[in-house]
Length: 203
Image: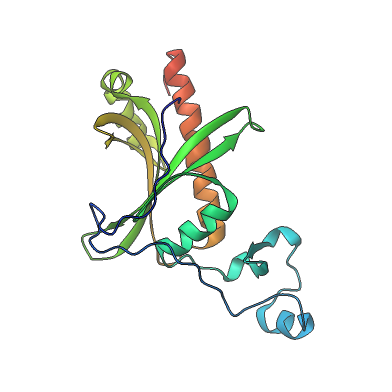
């Protein structure tokens, strides 16, 4: 949906995380290239194809080996692969290209702490403004009941209320491959819901 976005740097204090530090870049020790035979045997890489790797600081890593354990690590990877539209401590906005660049969908990543003190990554995208939200609350609740992936919720952005499609994922076991899958799923589904709401169709 058309809306203004802003690109800002890290502040010393975040509204939800005091004393948050800026994004730092980290190198991993596992490099794919020289002495391939030795590492292939150790990490079981014989059957991996080119698409099974991602590049970080010019070094190729197998996706199956990469766990996204920190928000800074996630933000580092996102900034290399997507257009970043918002950058604050533990809050990141990016733009997804949909339908071969014909449409674009903004997706937001934020870090939450659950009741057990675990860190959780929230992936969300705006699907309607406050006017549409008030007319579709019953449909949103029906969607939440039926959905197996993602839920609809009201959220505030720049003082305004929007209907958002969200997904929460614990950091434990969150791989790069799964992060990519959820980003594309939430972005694509959010764009589809937004179009249906704009056309007046039920989702």
